[in-house]
View 1 (spheres, rainbow, N blue to C red):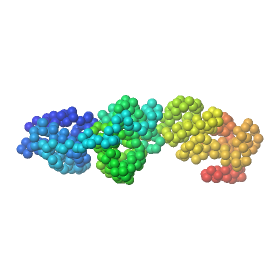
View 2 (cartoon, rainbow, N blue to C red):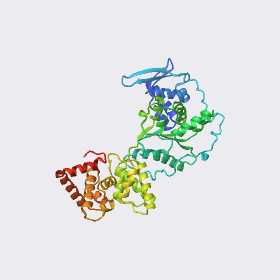
View 3 (tube, rainbow, N blue to C red):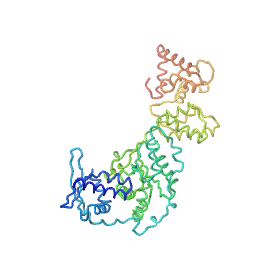
View 4 (cartoon, one colour):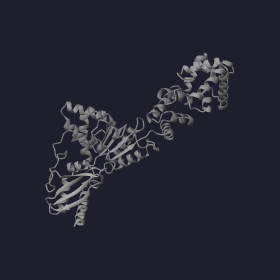
Length: 469
């Protein structure tokens, strides 16, 4: 008989599977384990993996469970949940369903059976998705640091709400491409499904809209509008950490969209576990789909991004300059784009080619460079000021002793305090070859060993950089 009851339960699950999406079935019904059925007491005992699953089933699927059990087990069946409360110590708790399964649950009030509002009545094509159409998959360059999120994002765009990746939670540091990726998902989805209601909104704007709705006593309209969205994309949700009322409202929006198979995409600068100030009931929902990390791009991906942008903007930049920018911009896509835009502006305004010297000058102003306190420009400026010699004289071919000393000191300090190879240092200081740099550094090192006055002079120069010599 036990086996027969197991078969009946399996048939009940198949019935349920036909009435929910694959993602919903996998998330909520597949984890249920048949325990026993008492014919005398007409009681069905099933095990669920957590209190959260029990709560969700009771809140959203009572009617469906009722229909399935009534069909296969008969009327007036009592459903009892065995809830696993502590997996480590194998602890559980038996809880009877809040109402007998034989009683149909009342239908919840939804946008389909309530009086429509102005926002409810909006037709799909009237909704502005607020997407940046320039942020697409075509210009989101793939690399090791973003391959998984990009692949999943493309799949979601092609099949919104129909995969197990709901919600899709993306996190990563500033400048790694989160906003670009979530926009690309929305843009591609809109291209494939023109009538779907796709909406991109920042967490800050959502909060402002909610605050305005409270002031105007239109919170119900606000919630109804967001519950009508097919693909909801929310950026920077870490900003809600202390916004209790906003979080409570989003909780209701989230639940409605999720149980109706609508796609939810969230972006944050940290994973759900680090979102302090948010209630567990929200964090567990954020984590029930897929959490994907976007890491900072490595040097090779930065090179690929720069080359792609140069092709689009018609900017010609030498390969060694591209490599230098990629190594210096700290793995920030935003910084890379800013540097390229600045180089483009300089080249147009001054009608000049982009070279290493210009790239270094732009990077100094545009990017906060980690572990690189000095640039060639800094060194030349300080050394020339100390010796009262112009940079033009240093770059000249003159062998005048004063110019040679400044040139040699600059090369020595550049080799000591930058990561540049001798060939690049020579190129930036008068377009000399690497052998000249090596000879200059050797000359300075030998002089420092025997000339105390020169040591003091070098100390004075390096102190102006606030460095210890």
